Length: 153
Image (cartoon, rainbow, N blue to C red):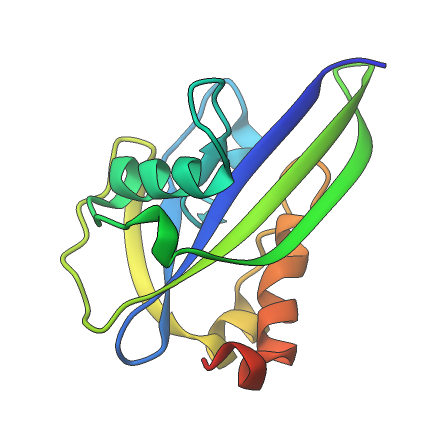
């Protein structure tokens, strides 16, 4: 068995139930990731106690939006075994939802070049996050859309 990784990502909804979609900057080392749609998130660091803390940290680092970890609700998770660079890897992704009572100012980091607030309907039909390794990101928006009444979006 190769590397084991865990990632926390966040779906951020504003007061109009619009989802924050980021657009990745150019990434020469990984061109397939360049200029692709994205949601905030990153690997769970050893110093993070849990995925919620990682998600809150990544939200702030990537968007400038302050989120309290207890306001993030786990809505989807996926563990998969993939081959990456010739090695098997176990990859777990945790997806959290943050519902805001306003539309905050967004200050994107160097990792992204732009952002847009999109309705969930638009995102489910037009935003494909499945370009990444293992492609589990592509499952989360359709899942939230299918269960939007439960999640209140």
